[in-house]
Structures are given as structure tokens and as C-alpha cells.
Image (tube, rainbow, N blue to C red; front, side):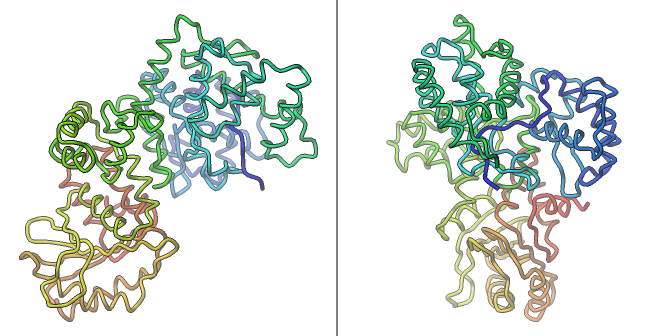
Length: 538
């Protein structure tokens, strides 16, 4: 199946002012989100009936519950709910606030303006066809910015949205799309038809014999209409029904300022690289609990300032910028900035800080190819969790073998972590298990006057050999008989997802460390959800 080359938004094509009604109906149909949703046709049918009762859906019920699934998909698109690992729908914080009637318009507007491709719903396995991997765009924000331009006379038509804006894949395409629209407006009727025909042939992913411009416009015009409708809801643009979006020229400056505030407060969210659940939970924070990135006055990556981008580059190795002191920041920046300038930027960065996982770190860490850097970044994550981290310490014994990461905690305890930057799959073999039990653990026991209390493996991708964790615990008893030393194996995105959860929920470092230790029970974790359940004892 061909991938999507054009924007999509889940039908039903409804005004956002009905989003709360849809959530209320879903709560009723699922008994307060307590019953399984995935594969539960009766729940899907019940949802359709609840929507009908509330008058937000036409008075009919499908044979298979497809209408209910479509409405639920719309709610997942805007991160009001997500599907957990048990197949149940769970409310996000913003979903609950809206359900409870708290600041409904502000929260719905925030979800519209933070909607992005890709997001947690668009990456679900059941969403077909998937978008091309090159998409990285905030559609509503992009559309409003485009409309708010003097060179376009502060308007764009539905036709222009359908053919030029829906085909944009990146936030940085604003200028090129504007140029295409200007060219189109100045073309003859014959030239316009040829332009539209070329777009239809190049961008339509649907399997159809008719690839004509008219067919393309009919098929995607409802998507254009829906984006016009949701942008109108924000109050930043006006929707002239069926025709165009416009900005009142006298309002242009205010619109630009409000969008810039969103760009600063809500940067592109990369948490889908961690897990779809963490993406949904974080993107689904309400306006009061959402924590912006910790760059202060440093603009997002779309900003053209070379200085701003250099600062972001230098800080991209640190997951939790809020925990860096003024001196930490100055020292980092002095790698490439003169002392006085580094001092100034460090001061500015500390003026406006909010607890949030560093998106630049997420993308760099989960795509790191250098093994040594992957180890260093893994150490930074553990440091942000709350451990005292020592990288590549020399063992007590006179041996060449050394561990990558040593974690100190609670005065006399420590753990040993082996970071494995395998791009495909890491398998914990019997040989590696024997090596951990006979060399790493005994050689480091007593280091800095501490007892080795646990061991672990952090993998760049998938892992196998979980049963050998128990084998290590059994083997090490021969040399350290007075302790029950257990292990853990988890992927880097699970480790990062745990840190993200801790930051979002403002957990103190002592509690973060305690939760991590509770999860160590000779188990491997491939999802953030199962790790958190183990950490919480659920």
C-alpha cells in the first residue's frame, strides 16, 4: 500500500466545539473508560448510540461499529485519549480537563495548534496508509502562518489549501508553498488545470484508475474543509464557509505574536520515538500542566539564528536541561562560545526554565550511531533520573575489563550498567551472562567502599536472552554469596520514557531512583508501560 503524501485528519468532519460532547459520549459508552475498546464491537456500537443520543451524530448505527471507531479515532488524533497496552482507551490530562468542563476552549485550541504529523495516533499499526517518514509538520500552525501573510493578501482559498498546503511535509516549507500559490494565482485557467493535474498525479496515494485533478479535489477537499474549520475555532483566522481562510490585516501582528508564543512553548514533539503512549500522554497535557522546553528565549530549530541553533546543538547531549545549574550551562557553552557570551546565554537560559525532556536529546540519543557517545548519553539519562554516575571506572582488580556505567546511590550501594548500541537486536548470550557474573560484578564489588546491588543492560534497539538475567544472579552467588543481586534489561527508549514520565509528573530524584530500583527483578522491558507497572508494583 502506498504511503500518504498528503495531510489527513480523521473524519467525522465536525466543529471542535463538539469535541467535549464526543468525549462525554465515549465515557458513557465505555463505563468511564473501564472496559476494553480494541476489538470490542459492542463498545463501538454503544459509542455510536451515545453519540446519537447527544445529537452529535446522524441518527443511524453502523452494522459493525465503524462509526464509533471513527469518532474515537478523531479523539485520539487530538490526544484526548490513547489506547493502552491492554486495549483500553485512557484519558490524557487534557482529555480529562475537557471532560470535566475546565477551560474547554483554551484546551481544545492548544490541542489543535499542537497537532502534528507524525503523532501517536498516526503511527498506530491500525492507521492505514501510514504517512511518509519525511513528514514533520504542525498542520494547523502551518496553515495559520501561511494565511497571515501580506504577500498572499491575508487569505488562502480552499482550492489552494487542497492542492498546495495539504502537500507540504515540513514546517520549513512556508516560503516554497507561498511561492507556489502566488504562481498559481497568476496563471491562466489552462495553466492552473495543468498544475492541479500534476499535483494529483504526484501526490495521490489512493489506488484509483482516475488520477485526475477533479477526483483529487473531491477526495481531499473535505480534509481541507476540516482544517479550515479547526483553524477558525482557534480565533486566529476566519473561515469563510466553503471558500477561504482569512486574517483581518489589522489583526496580523497579534496573530503572529500568538503563534510565535506557541512555537516557543510547544516545540515539535519527538516523543513518538520513545513510545506512542508517552507521545500521547505528553501531547495530551492540559494548558496548565504542560511544561515547555527549557531553552528560555532560544527559539525553536526553525529560527534562522545561527547562535540559537548553536546553543541548541551544544545542549542536545543533556536530557533534563532544567537540572543544569548556571555554572553547568556556562561550562557547556564555553566549549564554543567566548566566556562573556557563554555567561550571557547561561544567564538567559536560567531566566525561563520549565521541567521538560529535551526533544533534541531524544532525537540524538535514539538515533546515535557512535557507541561511545551512546554510552555517555545513557549515563546522562541515569544522572537525570537521580543516580550519581561514574563513566568507565577502573575496576579494583588488576584486569583490563571495565564497565561502561557505574551508578551510585543510597550511600553504600551501586549498580553496573552495560550499554549496547546494537542497531538491530542485542541478545544476552550465555557467554555474556558468564562474563557479567564472573568478572564485572566481583571485580567492582567494593569499589569506592560500595556494594554491588544490581546490574543491567541498556540496548539501542530490541533485545533477547531475558532468561540469562536469572542465570547471572545464580552464578554470582558463588563469589558474592551474601547478596541477592538481580538484573534488568531495557531498551533506550524505555529508559528515556521513564525519565520523561518522572519529569512530567515532577517526581523528586530520590523517588525516581526508588521507582527504578523497584523494577529490577531479572526482567526485560520493551515498553514504557510495562516498566512503569513494574516500578509501581501494579
